[in-house]
Amino acid sequence: MGDKTLRLYDTMSRQVKPVKLLEPGHLRFYSCGPTVYSYAHIGNFRTFLTADLIVRTAEAIGWRVSYVSNITDVGHLTEDDVADAAGEDKMERALRSKEGENFHNVWELAEYYESALQEDWQRLNLREPMVRPKATQHMREQILATEELIGKKSAYETPTGVYFDVESFPGYGKLSGNTQEGLKSSVRDVVADDNKRRQADFALWKKDEKHLMQWFSPYGWGFPGWHLECSVMAMKYLGETIDLHGGGEDLIFPHHECEIAQSETLSGKPFCDHWVHTRFLLVNGEKMSKRAGNFYTVRDLVGRGADPLAIRYALISGVYTKNLNFTDQSLSDATSNVERFRRADAVVDAALDSAGEGPDVFGSTLEDLYEEALEAMLNDLNTSVALAKALEGARTILREEGTISKAAAQSAKSFLDRVNALLGIVRHDVALPVTEAAPAKPAIDGARIQARIEERAAAKKAKDFALADAIRRELDAAGIELRDTPEGTVWVVKTASLS
RNA sequence: GGUGCCGUGCCCAAGUGGCCUAAGGGGACGGUCUGCAAAACCGUUAUUCGCCGGUUCGAAUCCGGCCGGCACCUCCA
Image 1: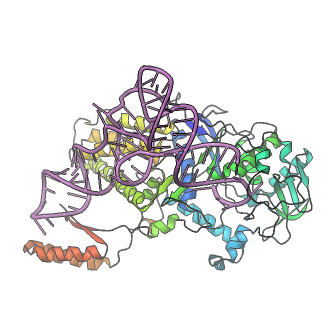
Image 2 (image 1 turned 135 degrees about the vertical axis):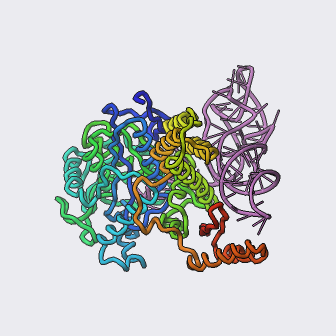
């Protein structure tokens, strides 16, 4: 186990390479979290899922993982460093929106969406980070860092704020491939702040006495720039040099570029050797965005009857290095796969209780499949292959339903446990609150469904199949599907579609 | 204009030089089961990898060109 290594695509060197650990057996990993001004959407979760799978895979080869994922709870401008009046604060805008009417102030709003994030995090069976630091709780560190950067002549104060001087950091642009020249010739019509020395300089501190969230600093009242919090929190919890840093592809520039410049200037040491970025999730072939408003949240989908683990499955069904298209179809595909794992799990549990003595018919088959799934994950998180191997294992178990010995059940159980630890798609690691566990509500009440099922059973007994089929069609029209099993007829609610 | 990513069966999606006459899932079709269905299980379903050239004993995989899609270049995961 000790000789295995995790290989991931590194944005900096543009190649798949092994994750090098500064301290043997200990991975220090920082993954950028969301700004909590609204519900996180499933695109955000694809990125968090990449981080989750990195943690799970690292643990599967025996690494200890220090995993930090922040919460940005300071509202930053929609046009971050643009000094023009169109720049609007995201949190303030959220507060003024219809949903914002439920909150007294931005602090309350941030708190609400933060707890909503936690709930959705659990629904999708994501590992809890070691720390989930918040920007607002690290003001002192951010102000001290700003002071230090000014002291090192890498930052300067203007009437509007404190800016990082990108020319003081020759490596600026090495992550994104943007050059200083390229940035100047950007077609984007950015309104330059006359107070900045260079257009590319970014804010460490914004002076603003009207901002709804403000702190006092050596530069007066204001709030920190967006990029500073991650530098400060990553170094505080993980050290000046970390092993791995992740986030969405949009963060490559400017966020991570700025983070490198700040961190390395502050410490004088390399900040991070390995950068992983998750490509955007598309919905029905189009990019999701908060601005366009075409995004799904986990709670939207769960409210429509989607199985949370199926959402998880759908979001990890493609590799993180490519765009993935989320559709009604991909969700329903995922649902049947997740159900297959659950069935295998139930079959194994039943066998564990009642199976008799006998040989382990699975031999090394399941063991081999798990190893192949792990290998796939170690090879740049090839979730497609890992899921395929896991599914093959589930099918292998299901094939033996009814004839599984105790020994076989034990090896199947061990397989499912390990697959679940690696991929999290068999069952939740932590039990969800009771309300979550309740099945989707049927359109008509359960007692009436049960009564119709009994009528149908009577009709079947009397060989009145026309009536029996009519009842089945009636329930089907109400979204209730009947399944005749050896133990009698059961009903399930059919999953609603996205559109 | 600059910087990256991608184009694989009806759909989703792995595979980046020979185990590929291309994994896995969905769908479709056939079978078992069933009063009939549904569910479940079993099986079948790309000699072909956007197009045109080239390199090579050998290419979906490497190189060049073209066509098409996507992303970033100071809102974004």
